[in-house]
Image (cartoon, rainbow, N blue to C red; front, side, top):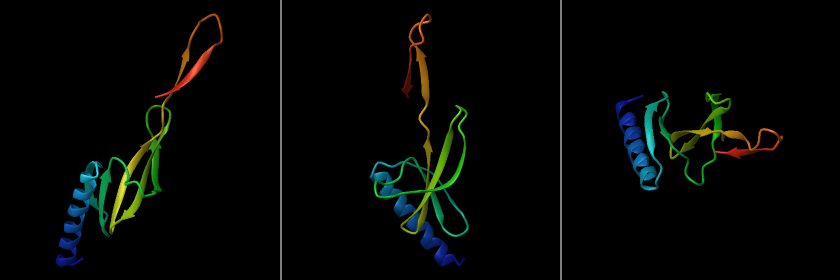
Length: 102
């Protein structure tokens, strides 16, 4: 990759990061995957649908999914965490219980 193209991509990534932050989306990190810049964000913009990039255990018995999407010539990545379901027993002598999603 030549220097001009590299600096153009960095400039575009900085502008996109600024736009996302102005829209209330936090940019957590950035890196280059060798083809284009990647921004790791807290949530996707409203009109973006991601594709599964990878998944892994979250330590609570569920799975976290990392999604990715192309956006303005960059790649956006964010993590979707599965909701935690907790069973609460209301009385010991009965079999009443309910599930609560946190």
